Length: 249
Image (cartoon, rainbow, N blue to C red; front, top):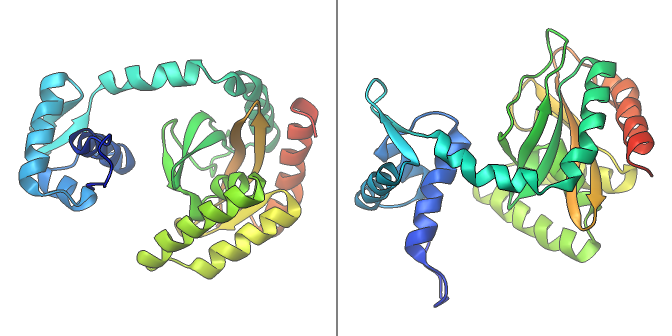
Protein backbone atom coordinates (compact mmCIF):
# COMPACT_ATOMS: atom_id res chain seq x y z
CA UNK A 1 0.00 0.00 0.00
CA UNK A 2 3.05 2.29 0.36
CA UNK A 3 3.47 4.83 -2.44
CA UNK A 4 6.37 6.93 -3.72
CA UNK A 5 4.55 10.11 -2.71
CA UNK A 6 5.77 12.14 0.25
CA UNK A 7 2.33 13.70 0.68
CA UNK A 8 0.61 10.30 0.92
CA UNK A 9 -0.04 9.13 4.51
CA UNK A 10 0.16 5.34 4.51
CA UNK A 11 -1.22 4.94 8.03
CA UNK A 12 -4.35 6.88 7.12
CA UNK A 13 -4.82 4.81 3.95
CA UNK A 14 -4.52 1.58 5.95
CA UNK A 15 -7.17 2.74 8.40
CA UNK A 16 -9.56 3.57 5.58
CA UNK A 17 -8.84 0.17 4.03
CA UNK A 18 -10.15 -1.48 7.21
CA UNK A 19 -13.41 0.52 7.09
CA UNK A 20 -13.83 -0.14 3.37
CA UNK A 21 -13.32 -3.88 3.82
CA UNK A 22 -16.04 -4.00 6.47
CA UNK A 23 -18.36 -1.91 4.31
CA UNK A 24 -17.90 -4.26 1.34
CA UNK A 25 -18.35 -7.39 3.45
CA UNK A 26 -21.56 -6.07 5.08
CA UNK A 27 -20.92 -8.39 8.05
CA UNK A 28 -18.55 -8.50 11.03
CA UNK A 29 -14.96 -9.54 10.24
CA UNK A 30 -12.21 -10.84 12.50
CA UNK A 31 -8.68 -9.44 12.45
CA UNK A 32 -7.60 -12.43 10.39
CA UNK A 33 -10.34 -11.86 7.82
CA UNK A 34 -9.50 -8.16 7.67
CA UNK A 35 -5.85 -9.01 7.13
CA UNK A 36 -6.72 -11.25 4.19
CA UNK A 37 -9.18 -8.72 2.74
CA UNK A 38 -6.73 -5.79 2.89
CA UNK A 39 -3.37 -7.52 2.49
CA UNK A 40 -2.15 -5.85 5.68
CA UNK A 41 -0.11 -7.74 8.31
CA UNK A 42 -2.16 -9.09 11.24
CA UNK A 43 -0.22 -6.94 13.73
CA UNK A 44 -1.06 -3.80 11.74
CA UNK A 45 -4.72 -4.77 11.49
CA UNK A 46 -4.87 -5.36 15.24
CA UNK A 47 -3.56 -1.85 15.96
CA UNK A 48 -5.92 -0.29 13.43
CA UNK A 49 -9.04 -2.03 14.73
CA UNK A 50 -8.09 -1.07 18.28
CA UNK A 51 -7.69 2.58 17.24
CA UNK A 52 -10.98 2.58 15.31
CA UNK A 53 -12.73 1.13 18.36
CA UNK A 54 -11.27 3.80 20.60
CA UNK A 55 -12.53 6.47 18.19
CA UNK A 56 -15.99 4.90 18.01
CA UNK A 57 -15.97 3.74 14.38
CA UNK A 58 -15.83 0.01 15.22
CA UNK A 59 -17.21 -2.23 17.93
CA UNK A 60 -16.35 -5.80 18.81
CA UNK A 61 -19.15 -8.36 18.69
CA UNK A 62 -18.54 -10.83 21.51
CA UNK A 63 -21.01 -13.32 20.05
CA UNK A 64 -19.36 -13.31 16.60
CA UNK A 65 -15.80 -12.62 17.80
CA UNK A 66 -15.43 -10.04 15.06
CA UNK A 67 -15.50 -6.30 14.38
CA UNK A 68 -18.41 -4.36 12.87
CA UNK A 69 -19.03 -0.78 11.83
CA UNK A 70 -20.87 1.56 14.22
CA UNK A 71 -23.49 4.21 13.36
CA UNK A 72 -20.77 6.85 13.78
CA UNK A 73 -19.66 6.02 10.23
CA UNK A 74 -22.97 7.40 8.96
CA UNK A 75 -21.84 10.87 10.01
CA UNK A 76 -19.23 10.67 7.25
CA UNK A 77 -21.76 9.76 4.58
CA UNK A 78 -24.73 12.00 5.33
CA UNK A 79 -23.02 15.29 4.33
CA UNK A 80 -22.08 13.71 1.00
CA UNK A 81 -25.66 12.68 0.30
CA UNK A 82 -26.98 16.04 1.50
CA UNK A 83 -24.74 17.78 -1.02
CA UNK A 84 -25.95 15.72 -3.97
CA UNK A 85 -28.40 17.85 -5.91
CA UNK A 86 -28.71 14.94 -8.32
CA UNK A 87 -30.23 12.82 -5.56
CA UNK A 88 -33.16 15.21 -5.11
CA UNK A 89 -33.79 15.30 -8.85
CA UNK A 90 -33.58 11.52 -9.18
CA UNK A 91 -35.90 10.53 -6.34
CA UNK A 92 -39.14 11.01 -8.36
CA UNK A 93 -37.70 8.73 -11.06
CA UNK A 94 -36.88 5.99 -8.59
CA UNK A 95 -40.37 6.08 -7.09
CA UNK A 96 -42.17 6.20 -10.46
CA UNK A 97 -40.08 3.41 -11.97
CA UNK A 98 -40.53 1.13 -8.98
CA UNK A 99 -44.29 1.67 -8.96
CA UNK A 100 -44.54 1.10 -12.73
CA UNK A 101 -42.41 -2.04 -12.88
CA UNK A 102 -42.78 -3.53 -9.39
CA UNK A 103 -38.98 -3.88 -9.31
CA UNK A 104 -36.38 -2.39 -6.99
CA UNK A 105 -34.78 0.77 -8.42
CA UNK A 106 -31.58 2.49 -7.32
CA UNK A 107 -29.45 5.57 -7.88
CA UNK A 108 -25.80 4.60 -8.16
CA UNK A 109 -22.52 6.54 -8.22
CA UNK A 110 -19.01 5.36 -9.05
CA UNK A 111 -16.44 4.86 -6.30
CA UNK A 112 -13.12 3.89 -7.86
CA UNK A 113 -13.53 0.45 -9.41
CA UNK A 114 -16.85 -0.03 -7.60
CA UNK A 115 -20.28 1.57 -7.64
CA UNK A 116 -22.30 2.49 -4.55
CA UNK A 117 -26.08 2.64 -4.15
CA UNK A 118 -26.89 6.05 -2.64
CA UNK A 119 -30.69 5.67 -2.79
CA UNK A 120 -32.89 2.60 -3.17
CA UNK A 121 -36.66 2.14 -3.59
CA UNK A 122 -37.62 -1.45 -2.87
CA UNK A 123 -39.86 -3.17 -5.40
CA UNK A 124 -43.34 -4.47 -4.60
CA UNK A 125 -42.94 -7.77 -6.51
CA UNK A 126 -42.22 -10.81 -4.35
CA UNK A 127 -39.25 -11.69 -6.56
CA UNK A 128 -37.84 -8.15 -6.65
CA UNK A 129 -34.16 -8.01 -5.71
CA UNK A 130 -33.67 -6.52 -2.23
CA UNK A 131 -30.82 -4.03 -1.91
CA UNK A 132 -29.70 -1.58 0.73
CA UNK A 133 -28.44 1.98 0.47
CA UNK A 134 -24.67 1.88 0.77
CA UNK A 135 -24.30 -1.45 -1.03
CA UNK A 136 -21.34 -1.73 -3.41
CA UNK A 137 -20.61 -3.73 -6.56
CA UNK A 138 -17.59 -3.90 -8.87
CA UNK A 139 -17.95 -1.72 -11.96
CA UNK A 140 -17.15 -4.68 -14.23
CA UNK A 141 -20.15 -6.79 -13.22
CA UNK A 142 -22.80 -4.14 -12.57
CA UNK A 143 -25.17 -2.64 -15.10
CA UNK A 144 -24.83 0.75 -13.40
CA UNK A 145 -21.05 0.66 -13.48
CA UNK A 146 -20.97 -0.18 -17.16
CA UNK A 147 -23.61 2.47 -17.96
CA UNK A 148 -21.55 5.15 -16.19
CA UNK A 149 -18.38 3.98 -17.91
CA UNK A 150 -20.05 4.05 -21.33
CA UNK A 151 -21.25 7.62 -20.78
CA UNK A 152 -17.80 8.97 -19.87
CA UNK A 153 -15.68 10.95 -22.35
CA UNK A 154 -13.78 8.52 -24.60
CA UNK A 155 -10.32 9.15 -23.13
CA UNK A 156 -11.55 8.78 -19.55
CA UNK A 157 -13.54 5.69 -20.51
CA UNK A 158 -10.52 4.01 -22.08
CA UNK A 159 -8.33 4.70 -19.07
CA UNK A 160 -10.89 3.37 -16.60
CA UNK A 161 -11.75 0.38 -18.79
CA UNK A 162 -8.07 -0.57 -18.88
CA UNK A 163 -7.95 -0.47 -15.08
CA UNK A 164 -11.11 -2.59 -14.85
CA UNK A 165 -9.69 -5.15 -17.30
CA UNK A 166 -6.43 -5.37 -15.34
CA UNK A 167 -8.37 -5.82 -12.11
CA UNK A 168 -10.53 -8.54 -13.69
CA UNK A 169 -7.57 -10.37 -15.19
CA UNK A 170 -5.74 -10.38 -11.88
CA UNK A 171 -8.74 -12.06 -10.23
CA UNK A 172 -9.56 -14.46 -13.02
CA UNK A 173 -12.65 -12.52 -14.14
CA UNK A 174 -14.24 -12.59 -17.58
CA UNK A 175 -12.53 -9.73 -19.40
CA UNK A 176 -14.12 -10.47 -22.77
CA UNK A 177 -17.64 -10.44 -21.33
CA UNK A 178 -16.94 -7.05 -19.72
CA UNK A 179 -15.66 -5.64 -23.02
CA UNK A 180 -18.71 -6.94 -24.88
CA UNK A 181 -21.12 -5.48 -22.31
CA UNK A 182 -19.33 -2.13 -22.42
CA UNK A 183 -19.35 -2.03 -26.23
CA UNK A 184 -23.09 -2.72 -26.25
CA UNK A 185 -23.76 0.00 -23.67
CA UNK A 186 -21.74 2.50 -25.71
CA UNK A 187 -23.80 1.64 -28.79
CA UNK A 188 -27.26 1.54 -27.18
CA UNK A 189 -26.94 4.08 -24.36
CA UNK A 190 -28.26 1.51 -21.88
CA UNK A 191 -26.50 -1.45 -20.24
CA UNK A 192 -27.72 -4.99 -19.65
CA UNK A 193 -26.15 -7.54 -17.29
CA UNK A 194 -27.23 -11.10 -16.48
CA UNK A 195 -25.56 -13.43 -13.99
CA UNK A 196 -22.23 -11.55 -14.08
CA UNK A 197 -21.92 -10.55 -10.41
CA UNK A 198 -23.83 -13.49 -8.98
CA UNK A 199 -25.89 -16.23 -10.62
CA UNK A 200 -29.57 -15.29 -10.49
CA UNK A 201 -28.94 -11.52 -10.42
CA UNK A 202 -28.90 -9.09 -13.32
CA UNK A 203 -29.78 -5.51 -14.08
CA UNK A 204 -30.28 -2.70 -16.56
CA UNK A 205 -29.07 0.87 -16.17
CA UNK A 206 -28.96 4.29 -17.82
CA UNK A 207 -26.37 6.94 -16.95
CA UNK A 208 -27.25 10.45 -15.77
CA UNK A 209 -25.15 13.61 -15.72
CA UNK A 210 -25.82 16.85 -13.86
CA UNK A 211 -23.28 19.69 -13.56
CA UNK A 212 -20.36 17.32 -13.81
CA UNK A 213 -21.87 14.70 -11.49
CA UNK A 214 -22.19 11.25 -13.05
CA UNK A 215 -24.54 8.55 -11.80
CA UNK A 216 -26.90 5.87 -13.08
CA UNK A 217 -30.46 4.74 -12.51
CA UNK A 218 -30.56 0.96 -12.35
CA UNK A 219 -33.19 -1.77 -12.07
CA UNK A 220 -31.69 -4.95 -10.57
CA UNK A 221 -33.62 -8.08 -11.49
CA UNK A 222 -33.84 -11.76 -10.60
CA UNK A 223 -32.78 -13.54 -13.80
CA UNK A 224 -34.69 -16.67 -12.82
CA UNK A 225 -37.95 -14.70 -12.94
CA UNK A 226 -37.28 -11.94 -15.47
CA UNK A 227 -36.37 -13.03 -18.99
CA UNK A 228 -33.80 -11.27 -21.14
CA UNK A 229 -36.59 -10.34 -23.55
CA UNK A 230 -38.49 -8.67 -20.70
CA UNK A 231 -35.35 -6.82 -19.62
CA UNK A 232 -34.63 -5.52 -23.11
CA UNK A 233 -38.28 -4.78 -23.82
CA UNK A 234 -40.69 -3.78 -21.05
CA UNK A 235 -38.15 -2.81 -18.39
CA UNK A 236 -35.76 -1.03 -20.74
CA UNK A 237 -38.64 0.97 -22.24
CA UNK A 238 -39.87 1.95 -18.77
CA UNK A 239 -36.39 2.99 -17.67
CA UNK A 240 -35.60 5.04 -20.76
CA UNK A 241 -39.06 6.59 -20.84
CA UNK A 242 -38.97 7.69 -17.21
CA UNK A 243 -35.45 9.11 -17.47
CA UNK A 244 -36.34 11.05 -20.62
CA UNK A 245 -39.57 12.39 -19.14
CA UNK A 246 -38.25 13.42 -15.73
CA UNK A 247 -34.60 14.17 -16.55
CA UNK A 248 -34.57 15.11 -20.20
CA UNK A 249 -32.91 13.52 -23.25
